[in-house]
Length: 283
Image (tube, rainbow, N blue to C red; front, top):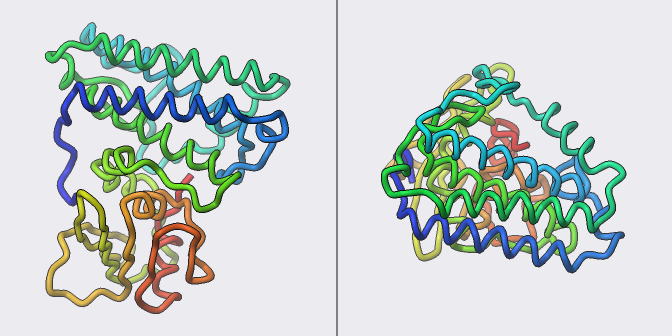
C-alpha cells in the first residue's frame, strides 16, 4: 500500500462504484424524516448535508470525466485547482448545507439518486482507452480511473458518516475499503497538519483481511514519510481490519479513550497514538 495507485481493473472498479452508490441509496431510502436531521460523523453536517455533498460531488465528477473523455482536463468554468495546503473544507461544507436547507427528505433522496445515476452512467460509458486519460480534480489533474476511485472514496467515507449516526460500529464494505486503501497515502498528504514544534514517532499499521499488509507512517519534525514495515521498532502499532484502517487514516475515529466501536486495537502509549490523529486531521 506504500506505492502510488496503479490503474485498477476498469470493469471491476465501475461495478464497485455502482454497488456502493446503490447500497447508500437503499439506506437513505429507509430513513424517516428524523433520520435525515441527525448529526452525522462530520461535525459540520447533518445526514441531509452529507447526502447533499455526495450528490453535488457526483454531478461534478461526472462533468469532469465527460470532459476528460473529450481530452479536456482543464477546470470547468468557475472551478480551479486548489493551492497546496488549501483544505477548502469550509466552503465545501457551506455549499452542502445551502443545498440541503429547506429540502424535504424525498427531494434530497432524489438529488442523491440523480447524481449517483449520472455518475455511474458516465463511468459505464468509458472506453478502455479513456481509463488513463487526464481529468480534472480540484486537488490535481489525475487519471480518470483515479477520479472514479476517489468517488468511491467519497461515497464510502461519507456513507459511513451517515450510517454511523445510527450504528457507531458500522463498517465500510471490504471491497470499498480495499479500493480506498490504494489512495490512502495521498490522503495523508492532503490532511497532514504539522504539530507546533514538530513531532517524532513511528506508527505501524498491521492491517488484516483478504489484502493484508503492514506499513509504517513516520513523523519526523514537521514532515512525515510512509514506508514498508521493517525492523525498526514502532512507538505505536494500530491493528485493524481494512475498514478500521481507512476510518482511522481518514480521521473518522476518536481514539482518545484508547478504544473504538470498530475493529481497531492500539498497542503502545495512548499519548503517542494521539500524535497520529492530531497530525492527520480528516474532514
